[in-house]
Image 1: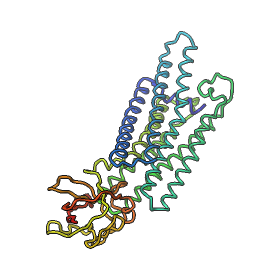
Image 2: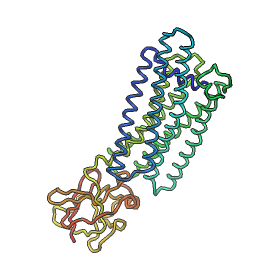
Image 3: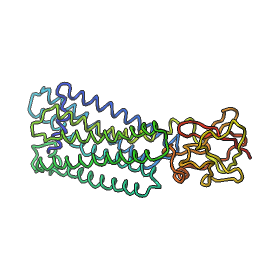
Image 4: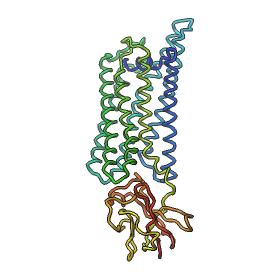
Amino acid sequence: MATTSKAASSSDPSNKGGTAYLATQSTFVAIATLLVLIRVYVRTVVVKSIGLDDAVIVLALILSLIVCAMTSLTVHYSALYLAGDYSTKAEALRDVTTALKWSSIAAPIGIFSGLCTRLSICLFLLRIFRTKREWRWGLYAVMVFATAVIIPTIVSLLAQCSPVQKLWDPLLPGSCWSPRTVIDIGYFNGGASVLCDWILATLPIVFMWNIQMRFTVKIGICILMGLGYFTGICAIVRTTLFTDGTSGAEQGGSIQSAVWAILEINVGIIAASIPTLKPLFNPSRPSIFRYFKYRRTSERYRKTSENTLAIDTDDQVQLNKLTLNTMPSAMPSSLSYYQDKGRNHGKVWEDLESQASMSIPEKVHLAERGREMETGSNLEYVGDGEVHAIGEYVV
């Protein structure tokens, strides 16, 4: 009963409390929805490679929207109850029971939404770390751990009362677990959530820090990925404010707990979606090549940095057999071509995952091949955020 009573009291409007809760909920749900929609557009239209992580985050968003609808109903019926405009006690009991019902159903759905978000992040990182066996096993371990903790928590929320309707109607005959047991389960779930969030925030930061990239770009990406730490903080605060509804906790504290819970769900979705949006800001999409030759040309196209990408001048080469002039430690994030002084600009190849410089084997693995370029195309590459001209494609 502890969890359901708390959920109901979390939604008590109590003057401005309910309005503040709904405003916070609406704001973060709107942001999360917008970012997920943009993510789906990027993956289906821009990159044209939708993955399981995208499907799972969409499921997390759908569940979040369901939770928001149910908590809005909880706020509505709680407001009616607090207004006290009833002719009979039965009418008052009906509204408070309805509020408890919606909050009781919303609680496990919200927890499952959080699980889907964490699984989506893991699946996304698995695509990035596809050549890092130790990292991949670590991500699999996080997925198993999160599922093993959260699924039993959801089951316990639904099984704490027999019959289950007693969760929102305490007058029904039956039995429920002790409030202390339910609170302990909530603390355990909160601790596990914090651990998973911080692991998933730390792994990509460590990975990005060890690859070749401009320092300012690294800082920006790390800040974005660091949203996972904020999600963990939300879980800490929400768990700390978790109390038994019969303990006489103040309504203000209960509303604060609900605010942090909705922040935890939707900030997680936001953090999972932002890193996938980078392809949207690329000036053009890849027009990937099959075979081409490279020839050094005039002074205008001479090498401009030690990381200049060059193709073997004697042989036609496939993408997985690129040769580099002055071998860099990492391949640039893209190779472009253009004709007629900038018109018909396109990508020869491009990293379709992280859009960042990576070790050469990983970069080749992430790139794709496509149609041949036309003769006379000028070549340029993107490295350290700068565009460098390197030569001309000729037959």
